[in-house]
Length: 379
Image (cartoon, rainbow, N blue to C red; front, top):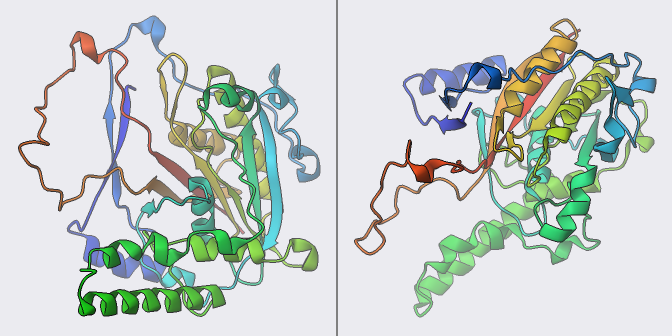
């Protein structure tokens, strides 16, 4: 497998019927498709990427700890490569609307934020969509141990957990990050431009206050998740309501890290062990959300972790306890070409095919998307 491209579909022929059925039967519309590029290799170089069989702890009290996942498995010490950076149990924020009534597809886009990372915003929207009122949810962050020490020297990897500022008022407001671009296009020298700019700013501030109060919801494929993420952080821990059922477990993906061959197998086993643990602890119809991202190792080989982790979970757990409910593709805005971009003679660059040429060696597409596998515990 040389490249795995995710193509987003927009307004296909079945879009109208899908918007009606997905809200009625609670599922996400398929709005993505895969384009796989395969390269012929010698038989001796074929690797099926199958994970070796491993014994996982069936008892949740013994199978999952804070500092290590699974202990020693198959001669590999998971503690040397994977650790749990953060594990927090909180209450799910109540939603002012029925979460299942929002029409959403399988491709979700996110705005970049100066403080909150891409995985944190993904986690926030997962809780907003798959959470359940009057229940608890658990956040489990995985970290690559050895890569963190190397990242201080070359900056290739950053820690998954970002310390939250004590004062959230210092963060950029939603009006500055989302609604400011349209306002800046107005003429600053006219009275009409100043009035319209002030009106748009007031509308955005009012909407932000309603979101913070929980009176409205911005749930959608391309919604702003800042207000909901702040609300997540403000919710009390599960110690205040220990009797509430555990309805959701979210494992955000590890973004911006350079995986090596020594990490990939251990990372896959860690996710399978978390799946075993969640299968025992989740309430009936509870959700387990695993975030993964395709990676390339130090040899340039592509590892489609989204598909591999799905196969690992189905092989180890099966369809009796947990079943795949949704397959979501997440990506940050800014990578797609805009339709309104004007191509001029000065900015035009002639395209040329480099496949099969000497310049093609080592040229790969950047991996900017991630997958979130949503499993449901069966009754």
